[in-house]
Image (cartoon, rainbow over all chains, first blue to last red; front, top):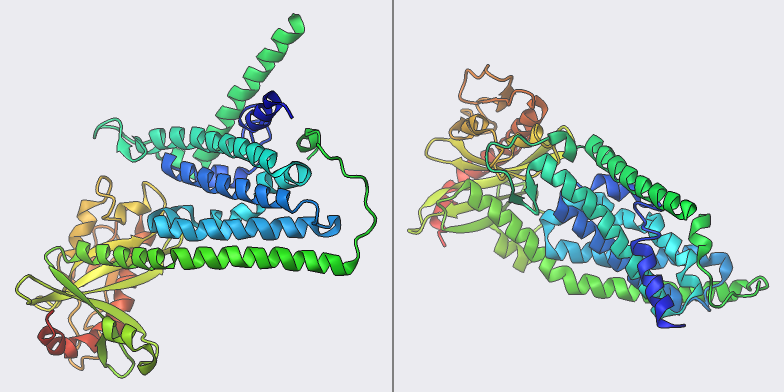
Length: 206
Length: 248
């Protein structure tokens, strides 16, 4: 495998197959925990960790996992790393743990991870699987952050907990409530779709 | 998930024959063993830090409701009214049956007992609302309250959370400067139940004036304090001399 395709495998998840904006996967945490930039970043980092390590382990074991029980095996492996992340977040900050709540455990059923395991890690070498998983994980972090930043700035007037607009700012509270999540996600999807369409138009006229 | 399968696989495996059951069980067993090891390792590594975080969180809440306290001692209350410092219980866990209630005694620099702090919780609008309050013997009242955890609606219910300094309802916090929790004559319950009343209707010192628009959250705080005070104070107040003499 040449270096260019290795890089392609890595970049694919970040841009061409971005899990949030292109594949529209993992919407549950995307909408629920992006009330602030730090929550979004932590959730993304937790998912990245689980993604990279479970894809690595699945890839290492890909030749001995019988195809009849592969999904069960993947879920067990993914659940293991989710448990590790769960403990780690509790050890780092209980406040963060409270904020992310059940969504840490729900990483187990995140279709981004199961999808990567089934479509990529089970057919590629450990190094490639990890590279691809890292790309998708970073893509997911970018997705979550772009929601989290917008929602925190508009809904609380802060960014990463630092006040941006002084005392007179009246926060747009709906942005940190569930409807705000759908609203901001809708806007981002619109931007990406418009961009994609313009690119296609350009290509067809050439 | 067709778009996921656009990956060209490096080693397209030829269709295999059905795997024998024995090897399936062996593989699953191996995977489970590896995963078990990883989990136990992570648990052992993080256990101390997690425990410490919980203690720090509790201590922060105690410090918030008793800002003058220079040293804090935790106590357990047992069914037979006996109270025992947490340290003793933790050292000899087998000697004591499960303790039901926990509270903290705060002392100033000279070792004088300032008051006690305890946790209470009740169901709020979104989830359980956990509060920590301080009881002062001098006024037989609650003279401090903070929220340990709540998931109430941002901008509405979370105005009752004094840890969010920029949005907390200051009028609401005045309820917890001297909230009456005198014990009844028989020392078995509070003379007056702590009660949350609608905004602007507070008439008695044992009532909490709710935040307008966040009545459910205000009520949860009142209920949490009431339940905890009803259970704890009749057992603790007769023992205050013992706690006082045990200054650190």
